[in-house]
Length: 370
Image (cartoon, rainbow, N blue to C red):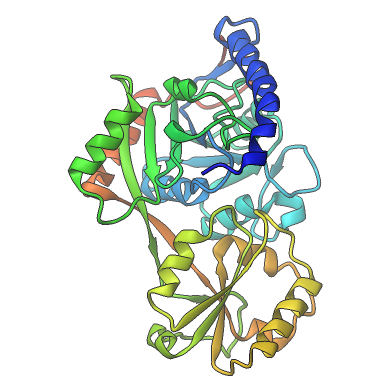
């Protein structure tokens, strides 16, 4: 149920919606140019702001495709302090690369990860500096219409699907629901494992998908806890001990609810310290958390966080050992329901193989303005 005061935002929503309509109209009529490239470009994005699982689904694509193709991932690099193009290395920091690109670069050292606020310039630089690239995955690029991707994958969270949402700032949508027509694949993320085929068909019917679109349902699979800070003290972890321990969970993500629900099923109690999405943690944040843990009087506990938050926490210097020695992150992987993962992967592989051309880039070669 909407808070009554939220309706005061509706006039702003109308103005925002008009701007979005005009912008998309200009692209649809080719008044604003959009660039299409000779090599496959796959866009992973959403209609709503945050929380749909773009990073984990991008990592799923990397895992599924890196044995077949030479992959590059292009991201804006949220949280970094610069705007220009940069090839991300594992030795980078959040300030130079952004948290999500840094996470991907450290996890997949055998692919190219790059950041650039200008997506066209980013693609051109990848093809210039890494001409062997056969596939570019554009992270969070659905609204960047200056690039025409070969395939668009749009994510929508099961508990907050775009079909029942509204435009910003009244709702969470960055553009109108009808613009889902630009998507080739719609992935309903964070779906309940118990979702039946009949329930899936009802959702697909309500979405009124176009004939060329494929809808899939995915859920999250949580792995065994991993030490957030490397050290000899944390070489192993026995999950069974959580039945008799409390967890203090630290998150700076858009929607921590699925992780909280999972941890509540395996631990005695979960105490959550929630921060805004992409929060830049400070030593004062950690000191405050440790004081609250001490004040709770709990002696047997573990500190958990997310993989993305762990990337930012590692950037802090001088953290006390009582924090670094007891902090773990929970890795997460995407799992397709109804055994549809192979079908989805085959669709993507066939697209890339069919459209894989000469990725070497020189001047305007390999580019088509539309």
